[in-house]
Image (cartoon, rainbow, N blue to C red; front, side, top):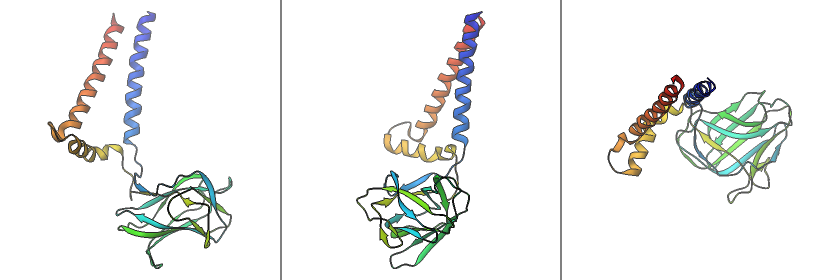
Amino acid sequence: MTRRISTLAAAGGLLVVVAVLAIVVSQGSRHAIASNFVPPQSFDAQVPAGGRVCQPGERVPAGTGAIRARLGADGAPGPRVELSIARPGGRAVARGGLAPGWSEGDVVIPFERTGAVEDAEVCLRNAGPGPIAVAGGRTQGAQALVDGSPTPGGIALAYLEPEARSWWAFAPEISERVDRLRDAPPGPLTLPLFLVLAAGILAGAVALVLREARR
C-alpha cells in the first residue's frame, strides 16, 4: 500500500511539473531585443524632482516599444517618469512615460514604436514630487548625466518589444534558428520532432509509474 501511494505521488509530481511548465511558457511578457550592457549594480544616478538623467551614445534597435530600467524611490510609491529618445542634435523621435505608483525594482516604460536610432540620447525625467534613483554601473561607453553633471558610470537600459508575447509565440523563430545552426536533416522539423520525442518520453514515464502503482 505504501509503495502504491509513493508511486501515485511520483506520477502526480510529474504532472504538476508539466502543468507548471505549460503555465510558465504560456504567460506573456515583453521580451528584450537588446541592451546597453551596463550592469545595474548600484543606484548612482540620483535624480531630484523636476530633474532628468540622460544616457548618450545609445543604439535603439528597430521595433523597440519599451525600455526596462531599475528605478528606486526610497521605499515610497514612485512618481511619474517621462521618457524621451532623441537623435544627435536634440530632436526627440519618441516619447513615453511611466505612471506614478510604481514600486522599486525593474520597471517597463512604454513609448511609441520607432525605427533604429544610432547614437541616441535616452532621457528619464522625474516629474516629482519625490526624488528617484536609476541603477547602473561602470561602463566603457559614455557616462550618464544628471541635469548635465556626469555620474560615476552609465545607467542600465534594456530595449523591449512593443507588446507582450508568450514563449509559444517564439516557436517558429526558434525552429528556424535551430535549422540554420544545424544545417542538416530534418531541417525545420528538428525542433518539432524533438518536442514530440520529449513528450513521448514523459508520457511513457508517467504510464510506467501508473502501471507500477496498479501492481
